[in-house]
Image (cartoon, rainbow, N blue to C red; front, side, top):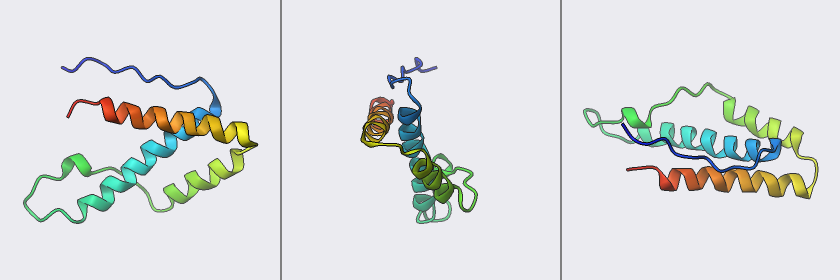
Length: 91
């Protein structure tokens, strides 16, 4: 079993929203990619349950939370931390 990875993200709501943006975007991207996998080829790793409108709802929620430039900067920090976690994940 792989060793658990640490997720170094600041403990702020904005950073959490930024990380969620990356995770949800990744899920949506996996769904899009799975549509191009030929029948009979493995694609379960791309599958995710994503209900219609979830991505738009997330974007609307983030827009509703955005307070100022400092908030946006913290959201970017959270997004970058999530991308870094994906980068470090074992293949």
